[in-house]
Length: 360
Figure 1 (tube, one colour):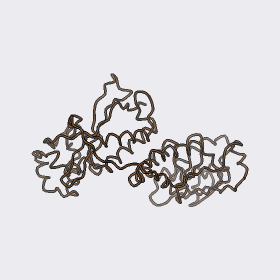
Figure 2 (cartoon, rainbow, N blue to C red):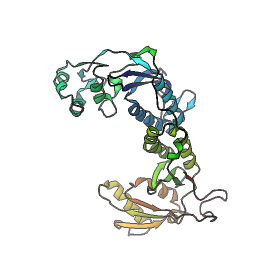
Figure 3 (tube, rainbow, N blue to C red):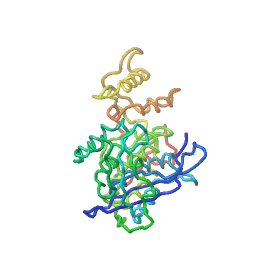
Figure 4 (cartoon, rainbow, N blue to C red):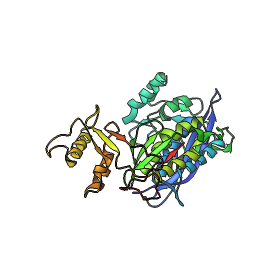
């Protein structure tokens, strides 16, 4: 499987009449498994500071999983985010120009015919219903500056199309400007929620954030990715500088997490409302494997077992891996709280591993 290789970043900006700054973000790169390795620019985000940073944080999750790298190797998500903050502080000024929103059959069209209905709904929601006839008739030409709100409705975060269809890196002028970005606060890490985590197997982790219940968070890189978008992004918007310290702290927590205590109780609800049929079958298969029902029987509506029941079996690896097939609604984890000075669970822990790992 290939990776996207990042070779450059650039931010362009324009100021609306009400004083709000709108950014266009461009990245240059190539795919590692496509030859020759010819990099090219592509627009990746359009919106105000919070909106484009949401896209940046989303892309940062690909850094954690290794799908977005530099020529020199891996990129830490926190460094990727910090570098974009620097770009946003000194963007190039976006040149004004006319943009033809032509509807076409090509997948590269400004508005593909196959997505015309979605674009129509975007325009209606944003109050631009009067421009729909022009769009459908093929005569809608807009100004990058004067019609930026219309463009945002289609190509912004909540729009139905990607901004690379209409903006190019050369829309950035040579002149740069300084735009104030939120300054990092010394107290940002005070917003760090309590993090509790255990490893389920070699790859998967169990995580509880703050007062939220325990949940199977998937592979370690996936758990970090969820933290980046679900926790780090919203906190960063209120407490700048949070992501730079919080992401590596969370990564360390999941990387060094002790394994799930064998006394942990797992309760399975076979078929909560809205559960896909294949997940229901997983519950049936697990109940049969554990000997809770006959080979041809369905699992009870609710059943439970100890985590230790999955251990020291020929099929332990398969059973532990299979826990990732369940939805959050199907699994409830009750992890025993370790007493101060308690010995590690002999089924799992080396003597130098602590029973709990929390960040405050």
